[in-house]
Length: 149
Image (cartoon, rainbow, N blue to C red):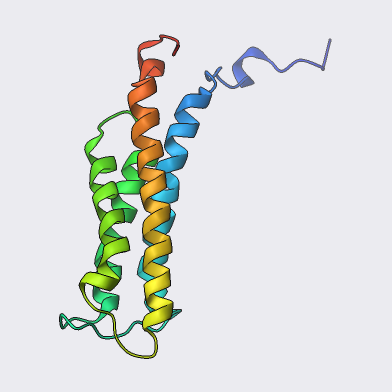
């Protein structure tokens, strides 16, 4: 009796490989998700100043971070299901770049918080644009069994 082959009942079911386009399109959503997680954690790592508009800058970072984590997670798991999470992430990325100047971050910690928001916002912008572009280019062709051209 040959022992080199598994009995048929113990072999795992054949799973089709994940097409590379799904992984690449989902990667942009994963970057947005991680940026959102960073924004939620950053007030405990970087001092966030008060703003001229009133609320502490940590409040806007945590709110934007929670939304970005949710939207990025949606796009990472299912990059071709809907494009609206990518557009909302794009708008939040713009907000993060503009917020330190629009809200008037002030105090000794303003430089670190401003740089954090601008850099994180730029990363979110790039990832959102990449995710939207890849979603539009490939348009979920893998779900229909078609090949992307």
